Length: 276
Image (cartoon, rainbow, N blue to C red; front, side):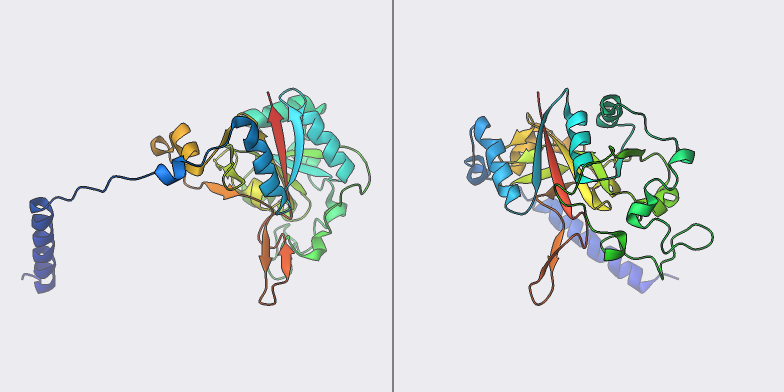
């Protein structure tokens, strides 16, 4: 027996298709002229990006292609940071290990690394998994305060590769890992923003969960506008599932306009500018 509802739906869709085919629409021509007029000289881009991002508490380090791992290692040691999460399968991850001067600990040896410094083990059940009833959010005070600039020098951080399922890494990720390193697709001068491009090898977790996010920025990957970046990198041919523009550390405010950092992401954003 025919379904009246189905017949009615098909009739409506048939009429819509017929109308579409009889009266084709030509998409309007996109006018990018207002955006294309926003230009800065190559030597002006980085100072502008830095000025805009520092205004929202982003910090900067300068390095070269040769010494950036050493510069990062010295900075983190000076800040008292004990652990750094990185993507071992990326070019930057391999370069980090090569220039670090020491190999990362294998999984068995790095269990519990620096656990005392950031409360690893707190809120865990007897099976070693996180207990959602007792485990605090990483932004809460029980994970310990961020090391402040000049807080003291110590041993360089332990490198922790992101080489396990996130379920196996949760106790460290939400307990003891203090910093995460990611690459970027460049930066935008108009807005003072980094372009983050998470992948399976370098997921968003690395830049979102640790209290400190270190972002590698190539000095030759600076663009005037977001449109220019999309055109230059041909985004239309390979759109990611998740692309982000980031200008500073995570911040939010309550109804009384009290600003808080690190509630929904990292408390500190360190941009490591790598020059040729």
